[in-house]
Amino acid sequence: MKYILSLCLLLTISFVKAQTPEDSVKSTVRQLFKAMLDADAVALNDCFANSAILQTIVKNKEGVVSVRNESVAAFAKTIGSLPKNMADERIVFDMVKVDADLAIVWTPYQFYRSGTFSHCGVNSFQLVRLNGKWKIQYLIDTRRRSGCTE
Image 1 (cartoon, rainbow, N blue to C red):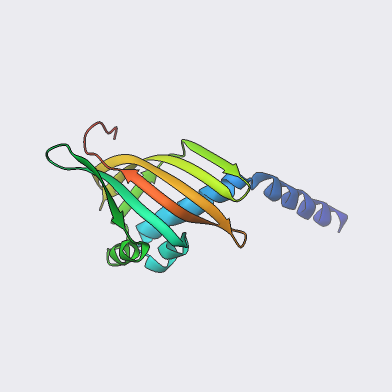
Image 2: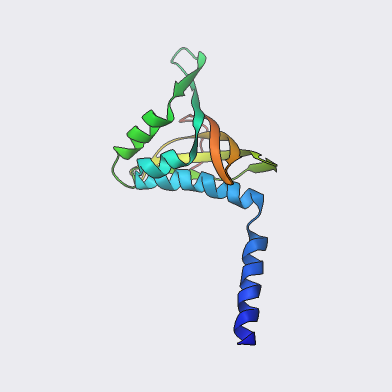
């Protein structure tokens, strides 16, 4: 019995030690991309704060840069209407910073549509811890088809 209790205590300590604030922030971001891959609008919506802002930096054919806004509801509706495994955004955590209830995350990505490379860019997240759970408050990204490494 002592052996089992010691093992349980060791596993608990290992888990608690492994779950840093950065890890919990990354978990929320990973949930977003899993929801996209699963075409799960409900799970996707759950990743965001109620007042979240989504923006994309775009460049038109003339090279003029602008910022396009999208609501979380519209984004979730679009993702929810896709077949599973269609929206596959593969990220790398380049930077994660946490201070109390605020976090920032920088993730270069490559986006695949039904297994075919589509575009790449960078996501910049601002997250806030609300009621003990990290939520995405602000997401802005870049999108390009050139200068990508597949």
